[in-house]
Image 1 (spheres, one colour):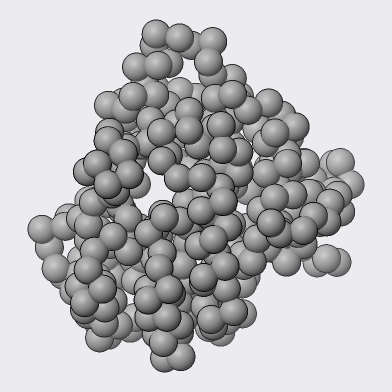
Image 2 (image 1 turned 180 degrees about the vertical axis):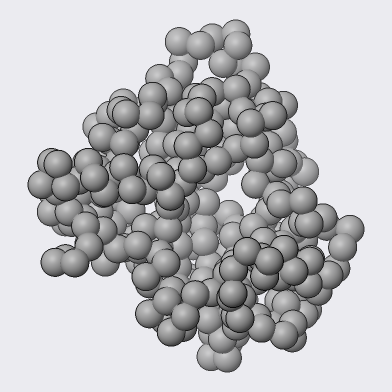
Length: 312
């Protein structure tokens, strides 16, 4: 990796499409099997859906209306001519097959939309859904992002994720080699995990058939069960301060497979909802810049400390 210390998402997308392409977030309101009793109740302990839904994302609006408003919002800031319909909020494969197909097709009929990015849970992927994505991928760009969150089952149980890491592996096995990009989300700093546990996530993620990765620091946000746990038993949590997180990200990236495209190193919850950690409003691009600087200082690059492990 002579020109870059890590594989970054903006360069990856620009290479695919030959220009900048903007994601437009969408909210289908499909719900979550971890809230309605299918898998569990109450949702994941850290989850507040309002932390990542833009103002124009309202499930009462059609997909077409959300796309139009999102494109209008971003066109005032960027000169993007192409867009990806990003099904972000809730579990976007948690509906009937016919409704899912209708929803994705509606997005693809919108002018300027050149592909789909679909976020979902590992336990909401079936062979039928995987085949549908494969068919769509013959016509446009498709990326399916699974919320892995942790590769450790005891952690998944502690945060009420209501699926196992083995189910995550099974979902990727259904989706791989079908012509689409596969992504993963991971949360760094979940309770009960020490530093070596978190570094080993890089090894385990690298064994999955993923092209992209979103990394999020654990954030305690209002109106969640984790917020109550944090208030009642703060010793459960070892939240990163900013400098420690940047240093950790440099080392974490060094252990990742070199071709995994890193979409982000951190997440930003609205200040009105964020309890901790408070990083004084630092933006994602600033954290990326500081991670890169730290890697340069340490002589690190993505994959330099990669530890090959079999997918399993």
